[in-house]
Structure formats: structure tokens, C-alpha cells
Length: 458
Image 1 (cartoon, helix red, strand yellow):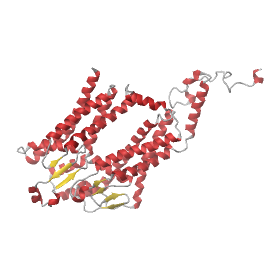
Image 2 (image 1 turned 180 degrees about the vertical axis):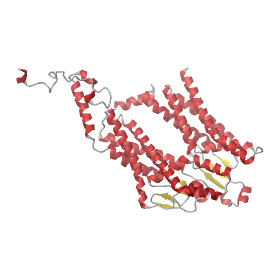
Image 3 (image 1 turned 90 degrees about the vertical axis):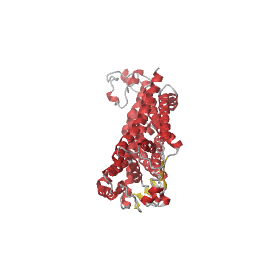
Image 4 (image 1 turned 30 degrees about the vertical axis):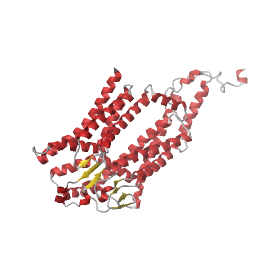
């Protein structure tokens, strides 16, 4: 009964995640639809628009076709009548990912992480299929397979990651426990996978935080340009509201752009353009207000910002090394080098995936290539994080670490002669002198190496 209950709860979580995402779109669109067209509006197009935007928020590209009458009315060139829009507004994707991770963690805590993840994913796939089949627009098309597969894949990844994180720590009585036992069998390498995951989390938090701070600083100093572009758009209050909401859902995407800028490769806002610390080369930029944050010029001195990812890697190395010392698990040079490389590789992989979602087309012509290039971003961030992590993980061990290791070795040797000393270290990180197990006045005559000289015994 418990397994059935967990499956039902996971399915309910998936339905809530999809419903909340759709309602977050549908509610403001309904209000804007009413204000723009009145009660006599064509309400039949509201749901297809909502479903299409929901799919777009999960990485599904859009194929936009401008009708002929609109081409004539707006004097748009015929070659611009059809184009793709594929830069994902990551706010919706992150919401689904985090909600799925929470659901997977709850299923793992109940002891059935695999069933819960599969149940939730199946329900989310069914909802995605229903949305893909019913939300079809003539002017904006989405590939049917991607409209079903990508939202489902996002939920599956989130659910599995959240479930495995909990099941790895608490056990699942199945495949994860067997894998855990195999890793633990190699004592020297057992802490390495967990240390890599922990270090990667510290690295990503550091890089994302620095990128968000850089974006906030640019908003502070170049907010006037953003306001000027709003005024140049000559839109009413309703249009300004729509533009503002659209830019807010792209905020995580802009943070990825800022992270690529901090790493060095930067990003582009069209074919033949580049925005990086080494230099800025811009042509005609669309009049989107958020593009007012783009720096007009750069200097070679700004390359100093690449120290930020290095510092994030160093912080991750320090955090991992401090945790290992606190736990009393000193590792050799090979293991620490593997941790540094693992942190760099996993961080680069996550950055590359984010760059793929944050890069693409946003219009015809030169706007077919906008955002950071995935491969340069991956390589730059990975190398910088590797340098920072290696500095802290591979540096000579501190005397406190060596003293800790010598104390543990001494206790192990003494235990051979007096088993009661085995409990001297009842908790990691407690100094040997503070453990209540020892009796300072106990005779040591029977312990090898502490017996008095023969003439004193006589």
C-alpha cells in the first residue's frame, strides 16, 4: 500500500508542477488579453498561445511565420517572413526542475525513489502530450516530438537528481546501496564521488552568484539606457508591462550570459558580434530594453574578471578539503587530483548545457545566432575552475592535517594492545585531548614502548 501511495503522491506532484506552470502563464495572459481586446476577443487563441509558451519555456524551439497581410502592413521584407526563436526563458525550466527534484526527494525518503520518479515522469509526459496536441497555432509552430519529449526530460532529470541525492545518503535497499558498497570497498577512493558533487555545487553557486551580482551592477550603472530604450519603443502601459514580464522570465538566461562573460568567451547578440572582457564589437542591436545593459566598450584590463571562476574553484577546493579533514579522511595526491578534475569537468558540463539552452535564434538574419557559444564557455570555465580547485586541493597539507593523521595512526597502534582505546575518537573533529575515554593516571607498564627501565623496576 505504501508503494501505491508514494506513486500516487508523485503523480499528484507532477500534475501540480505542470498546472502551476500553465496557470502562471495563463493568468497574466488572460488579464492582458482582456485589456487589449476586450470581452469580444477571440478567446479560442488564448489556450494555444499559453501552451506554446509553456513548451517554449522548456526548451522547445518556435518556428514563427508572419502572415502576408501583416508583412504588408508593417513593411517587413519577405525574407524575414519566417524565422526561428530558440533562446529558452530558463525561469520556467528551472521551476519544473526544482519542483521535480523536491518530488523525487520525497519519494526517496519514503524508500521508493525509482517508482516515484517514474510515476511522476509518466504523468508529466501525459500532460505534455495533451498540451502539445491541443495547443497548436498557425503562426507559431513547435515540433511535436520535442514538445512532448523536452518538458518530460526536464522533469525526469529533476526527479532523478533529487531522488538519488536522498537515496545515496539514506540508502534504498537496492541498486544504489550495491553501488555504494562497491565504492566503499575501495577505501581510498570512496569519498571521491561525494566530494566531486559537493565541490561542483560550491563552484556553481559561486559562479552564478558572481554573474547575478555583475548583472545587478550593470543594471545600476546603465539603467538609464534601459529606460531610454523603453521610451524609444513608444508603447503604452500594456505594452511596457508585456515587455517587462518577458524580460523577467529571461533573467536566468541573462545570468548565464553574464557567467560566460566572466569566464572570458562572452556572448554574441547577432552574427559577427561579440561582447567579452577582451573587447566589445556590436553592430545594429535590436531595441529590446534589456540590451541597454550591454557595455559599449571593453578594455584588456577587464580580463581580470576571469579570476572570479578561479576563485569559485578555489573556494570549492577549500570547502571539500576542510570537510575531508573534519571527517578524518585524509586522501592521497591521486585522489585529490581526481576530485579537482571531477569538479572542473562536471562544472563545465553543467555550464555547457546551460549555454546550449541560452544560445540560439531570436529573429531573422543576423539575429539567428545570439547568446554564448557552448564549447568555448565549457573549456574556459572548466580550465579556470580546475586551476582554482587544484591550488587548494593539491597544496601541501597543513601541519594540523598531519597532526590529525598522526593521532589517528597512534590510536590505531595503541588499539592493538588496549581495545578500550578504540573509542577514543567517537566523533569526527573532536581533538584527542578532549575525549573522555582516557585516564591520565592509568598505568602504562603493560603497553609496549612505555615500560620503565629495568633498573627502576628492580
